[in-house]
Image (cartoon, rainbow, N blue to C red; front, side, top):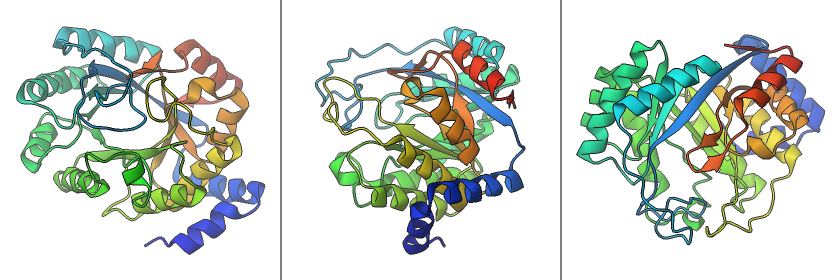
Length: 308
């Protein structure tokens, strides 16, 4: 079990000492100079009853985003083929809402099989699901399920009140029990402290088993949400979080997710050195902009990296 005291010591050590330790751990557990790329498609957008303070899709925020009708399987397959052509090895499908209804769930199950037939890994994020649904997803061939914890247990209630962090952990436990790999992480820039960031990473590290993938997002501030004026995250503190995640969860793949479109190439390179080995490619992540594939390929080439 990871302790807060030891994790904080590591987080607060001199910046280059922290990066050296994280990079050493990364080289021992992962192939050097490889970046895994995923693509995320919003299959159903908007109209969510949850009150996540950062999200444009919540009907409780002031964004007034119209609810998008669910995509059909053919459209999903076309997007997956495009993602594979860009260089992505994993295709992720996201739906809005607290939990999927029967129509959404059945469509996603059909889409998973089609995505797998293309030779891609399949990932979905649909909110909370039960054990029966998890078992069905596993039987369809689902590789990954994304279910972020967002922030520390102590700060969670300041961001979301319509569910608890225990609800999130319950779903994660179910997914791991049926053998689906979990992608989970959080968002930096919600107004939390560095202690909250450390506690979030400890929470992930101390799950029943380490997450297969850890997603670290930098808040994209959306007008109309309650966090549209949240303070910026210091870039070096962001890198420290990547490094600590690498040290605490040596075998997990660390992904820098939302917020990359406002990161310099130099900041992203520091994140890769600190242990990030995955990115999302494509022009959008659900409702927020993302770095385009052309820019990603240029950066990967400049850093002598290759797509895994």
